[in-house]
Length: 68
Image 1 (tube, one colour):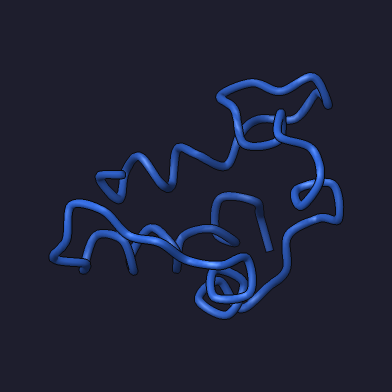
Image 2 (cartoon, one colour):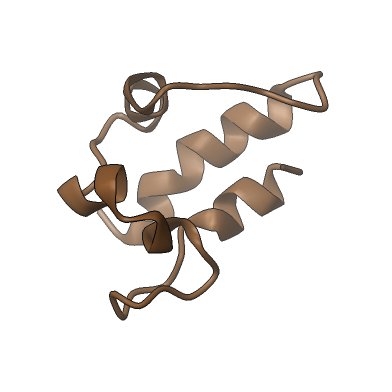
């Protein structure tokens, strides 16, 4: 599974949401994705940025494409 496809279910979930704001737990997001976040996503805030210090691309594009 590619990183992009891993987060696609979350993007689709957000696109279908009829709210301007949504709150989900890590567990809820992982259930939507059908996969888990890497361990450092729970403890490293940088992982959630556009570009992080861990040297990987952010997963936020899927969230942004979902209009969040």
